[in-house]
Image (cartoon, rainbow, N blue to C red; front, side):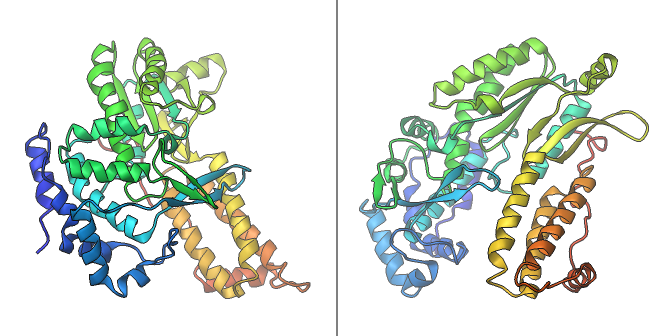
Length: 439
């Protein structure tokens, strides 16, 4: 019978200062590994050994028995991640993705399922990214309500430069030791951090950072920033503030709302020093302090200037008005994100038109569009969502008609085809009206 990992979270909540000294058996337990295997998604790209979930599962019991034996005697050695460079649509830049071997993904999953209950008991409400039952829309809702209903006058938006590439390994282990006293767990995590990456034929040692795309990386990122930023903000910085302050963090992106200007300006200086202690720096071009809120909107109206805006989680937040003329926090899809998404659509259609038939492309496009609308169709963003859908339709019409010298569709035929696949309509998926309810 699998060891009960659910009790770990209960123990962590009951004893917030407990350091867990016996956790490793949850990672090595054969039944736990079998359950973790079943829960993993199939069809993911293989690592450097070429093994997939399907091939690993063909002789599952033998593979799991061998893995648990190596884990128990500390003979498990994670292999380097295969680095894949993914282009950023609409930009010449690329971002690295670390693709793990399947067995390493399985060990990552076992560690995550063991450690996550402990840290879910510790993480603060300001943290939303990559946490169970927490979403970006919940963060947007809480942020909007705070600006709307609290005395917010200043907003500090920030972005940490290359966060996953600059996680300091020694600090990571120090943070883990606050709650994890089982040295076997720490040793496996240290090996994972040091396993490095294989870029083509060049293997790079893991001196710092944790691979983007690794199963365990989001949890480690939240642990790192919980101690480096969240606790410091709540326990130290807020204790010395003249006014109120609120932090909202989604992974390595965060915004802070302030009541007092002096607090806001002091934070903009102290947070750089604080993060610098842990090998992290802020992107200067994406970090700034701005006036925002009902008072900024009123001042802008008197001075003949429009209030500033800020981007967060793909949305531009701006000072708007209700139908009655009262202040209201509103959001729309950021222009940068819109350009990026449309550039990705263009590339997808251009490549897909030679691989799939017209009907299949439209069916796949429907799924892609619906996925985007499921995220961006929020209160006050209907117009931008309709514009996005129209641009997607124009791209499809243009590139499908380039399949041959003869036009595939007239606009009337294209509209009929969209109706045939039940093309998505723009319907608000998330009601984020900051005027309703209470915090």
